[in-house]
Every structure is written in structure tokens, then in C-alpha cells.
Length: 257
Length: 368
Ligand SMILES: Cc1ncc(C[n+]2csc(CCOP(=O)(O)OP(=O)(O)O)c2C)c(N)n1
Ligand code: SF4
Image 1 (cartoon, each protein chain N blue to C red):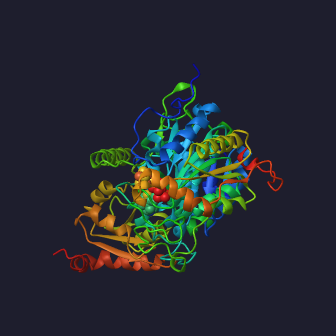
Image 2 (cartoon, rainbow over the protein chains, first blue to last red; image 1 turned 45 degrees about the vertical axis):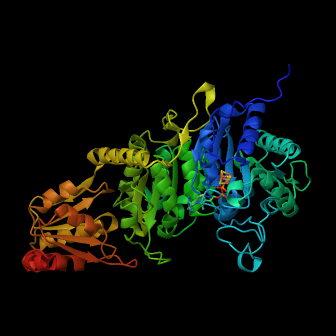
Image 3 (tube, rainbow over the protein chains, first blue to last red; image 1 turned 180 degrees about the vertical axis):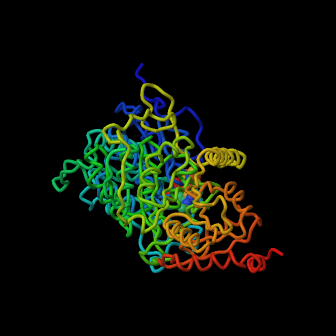
């Protein structure tokens, strides 16, 4: 009989602290699958950020560092430079990456730091109880936008994948969703590709994963999935924004030699 | 010792760090320490090392965290406003017990302040400038040679206690040129290969168990235990690494206390006072954290008065008072804003203390 499903080796067989229906768990599995399939576990060093995924090092079965809020790409840079053959990845939420950590992510991309960034966009600050994030949609209610996000007060949501794709050093940038089996399969392929780019020494890779936060959105897990498809995907289109094959992707990489 | 060569303080500390095994430097430009990153950008690639100009001091210190967590000997340098920005990262380094070297060539503040030398970062260097219960090991060299010597041993100390080490200099020390000798055999190519620390995260190779570098302890009892562990390490460092120098203190009746650049001025003030018949001496902390409380406290018992001199409006003087613990009156003479105290002013104040200051001082200090 052919085995079609297995718990990846790079994930520990332990229950997680994530809320029921939260898609952090799916994204963890996709990352672990990619590391397993590419045989990278014994070279992998993850960087956990500050957010609901702060304890992701309890779930991934590889070396990990825990970074200050927003600084994971800088911490990853330090690891990358100190251990040239390591596989270095960060796992960051949208408060972490798109708000407090914007300088670090932009400059890691500028240097084409040979790291992989897993960026979890759930349009809200999960861990601190549902405050507005830079990615919160217009009109979306949060605990700090009780009347819904108003552009006059808070501007328009930040499209990180598109923004980073304008940086010459960004080798691979994609946005995926985790809201259906087909989306999850595509997300898995993108994450794997991002790690392949790093393993080949081709420079900075980032996969933005549209994710749910049923708890702070005040929805059932099923409604939350539908909400992503109806509201987030139209504003945050899915796809590959930069790949190594694109002609405008310049040569790079000696910075990470 | 090999021959002596003229070195600017900033370049000397950079070369010394490399000879101590530093192979990674992350920094951001700020006066008056720019010669350190400039030197590193030239020199590190020659010895197989890596220099990265970070996007900010915040990023630089977190790059230090990553590299230190991977077991590398790593360094950053800055000056006061930049060190303020690094404080969050320093707190994380202390919490995760990551050894590293941080150089602060202090300039005047608060705010943007000025670029002239100052000692107004004593509090943030020694009292935990970042959040949480932790201490750094902080050296306050008074010459370029001493800065070299302390830097050469800094990683060994940082690694022994798993506490970040800071070199607390100032604009004078960074900019002045003095003859320096490096120990024979300290050339970078002779640097010993350091074995991978048992906590370093470089990838769980060969089937070893994964490791975690972290400073998070959400359960109060666990954080309690962790902080006690940190304190224990610092106490061990205090017992073994506390350093100070005494100049003509054996028979001193007036004791000057000063560190770094200010101690150089005090040293010449002591000579002038002695010539004028005043029995003055100098107590110079070399580690300002751990502070030599015990040695200073003992010395203070024999003197009529203590005079603390700083390029600040009074920061180390708090530690001096703790050390002296009422055994003698403690007076203070300080300059701020980048002005260096004059030997003549120190002589005048110390002479007055020797003549009749003790009584005045007792009232001033509220000791009756
Ligand atoms: C310097 C600092 N500021 C604020 C916080 C508080 N904080 C913890 S998690 C978080 C936001 C996390 O949101 P996000 O990155 O979107 O991740 P999620 O929890 O949604 O997965 C904040 C602001 C902190 N830990 N450190
Ligand atoms: S608060 Fe939101 S993001 Fe955090 S675990 Fe719960 S559902 Fe997931």
C-alpha cells in the first residue's frame, strides 16, 4: 500500500499550542515537509519571531534561535554569515515582519541574504489579542480599529510580496494561501522552491502565506477560511512575483559566499 | 612582546579583537568610532572573516545575536546614541547567555548630544541599559595599550561566564594615537581553533539533538530560576574578574576615583598634589561592572576624603558612595557635554578637601 500521508520528520510529534483551526499548523507542516524532502534537517537553523509562533522551536525538530520582535532577518543574517553551509529560515507574522521589522526584511532582501523567510499574513496581531496589523484590510474590525480600519487614519494595507519583489536582491517571492487542499498543495510547492533557491545559493527567498486567525477574527475555522478567500485573496493576489528564471532578476550571491 | 607601533585607539581595538579571534563584525557608522568598522571592512576579509554594514544599530546587534548563537566570535561597535538602540538586543544577548564583544566609544548626550568625548553612558553600560535583570562585564581602559590588552582577553571572559563584554571607551581613547605592542604569537593566523560550544546552533549535524538559543521563559518560576542562574554567573565573574589600579594610595589622605580618560587627568593631578605636599592617591576601576566595591571600600577607610571625577554630572559616583559606605565623605567633580576636566581644577578641589574639606563634606553628605 502506498503511504500518502506522514508526519514530517522535521516536526516533533507533540501537540501545538495553536488555537483550533489556526493555519499556523498547516504552514509548519509545509515547511517541515520541504526540509524533509530536500534532506536539509541536519543543516537547518530556524529563527522564531515574536508572535503566536514564538514557540515554533518546540515543534520543528532542528536547531533554532528565538529573535527579538521584528529582528529575525537580522538574526538570520548573523547565522548565515557564521555558518555558510547552514540552511537558515525565519518564521514571522505580519506584525513582526510588516510592522516593527520592515527595515530588517527590506535590507535582508537588498543584500540578497541567502535565507528563506516564511511570512504568515493573518491580517492581525494574534498573540497580543487581535490588534490592527499593517496588513489588516480596510474596514476590518480589530481591537484597535473598533470601527474597522479607516484609510484616513491608518492608511492602506501593505502588500509585502509586491513590495519586496521590487528589490533587485529578492530572488524568489511568492504569495500562497492555506485555505483549500489545492491552495495548500501550491503553497507546499512554493515553500519547497524557496528552500531550493537557498540550497542552490541563489539568494533571498520569501513565501507570504495567507493565514487565518479564527480566534481574533471571531469566526469559526471554516468561516475564517472562507473569509480569506472572499476578502484577502482579492487584495493580496496569489502567485510568484519573482523567480530566479525571471530576466529582471540580476546576478547576486557573492555576499553570501 | 613584539615591537611597538603607533595605533589610533579605534584601530587598535579592532586589531586586538581580530587577534582575539573575532571573525564577524556587524556595525553602523557613527562618530567617534567610525575607524572601527572601516578597519574591520579592510582587515576582516584578509583573515577569512566577514564584515557587514547593517541597516541600523538595531539590526547590527541582532546580527551579533545570530552569529554569537552560532558559536562565532563576533563584535559590534558604536557610540552612545547607537548603543541606546542596541540595548534591546543586548538584553536578549544577556538573556540567551551569548558571549560577544560590544565597544562603546562614548560621546556626549542626551539626545543627539555632541561628538566630543564623555562618560555619560556609565549608567546604561553598568546598570543594564536594556530591560530585565542582568549585568554585563564592562571594561573601562585608560590607554590604547590597555584597551588592546583587555580586548585580547575579552572573548575568553565572555565565554567563561556566557556574559556579553563591553569595552567602555570615549572619543579621546578612540581617536588618540599611542604606541601599542601586541603579544608575540598573537597574529591572526595563530588564532586557536575554538571548538563548537555545546549550545551553538549550527545545524543538528550527525544526529545530535537540536539546540535552542532563546531568552523566553513564560513561567514565572522558570524565569526566576533563569535569572538566578544569570546572577550566579555574574557573581563568579565578580569574584574572579574584578580589576582596578591604585596609584600612590598607600599613605593617601585624599583619594581620587576616576576611570578611563578622566583617570589620566587625575593621575597627573595626583603628582601635582604630591609636589604641593598633599598626600593624594588615585583609585581607578578597570572593570566598572563588576565594580571593585570591596577594594575601594577598604581603601576609603584610611582617607580623609574621596573625590570622584567624571565626564558626567555624576554617575559612577553612586557606586563610589555604595563602596565607601560612609567611611569617608565623597565629593564629586564633573564636567559634561564633551568637556574634559582640568587637572588644575581637580588639584584645587582635592587640596581644599585635604585642608578642611572633611568637615564641610560631612554636612554636604548629610553625615553628622
Ligand atoms: C518590542 C516588542 N514590542 C511589542 C511586543 C508585543 N508583541 C508580542 S507578539 C506581537 C504581535 C504579533 O503579531 P504577528 O507578528 O502578526 O504574529 P501572530 O501572533 O499574529 O502570529 C506584539 C506586538 C514585543 N514582544 N516586543
Ligand atoms: S491567536 Fe490567532 S494566530 Fe494565534 S494561534 Fe490563535 S488563531 Fe492562530
